[in-house]
Image 1 (cartoon, rainbow, N blue to C red):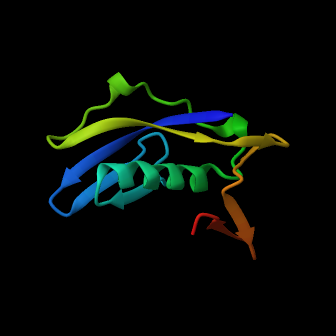
Image 2 (cartoon, rainbow, N blue to C red):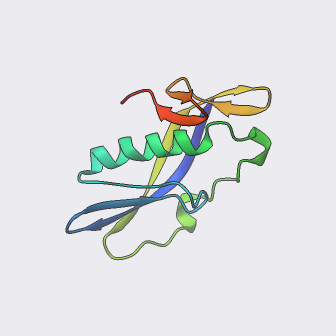
Length: 104
């Protein structure tokens, strides 16, 4: 199933800070826009892995966000599976109770 949330990309001299207002624990950063999208997908996948589907916050519409001078709103999509009512990703591996990103 496709999951989509809007991320705020805030551009600075030293890179791009990425946050998801609907998911406050989903934060990351990058040096380029392409890398920021990839990092945003990774953090979104890890934050949502194991969450009850029924507990997902409803995504705020893109036009409801305000950005600072050097910012933009970017829609980030990931693929997740629902098993026993919880979200899971094939890209995430759990080892000794910790979540590891399989891409690494």
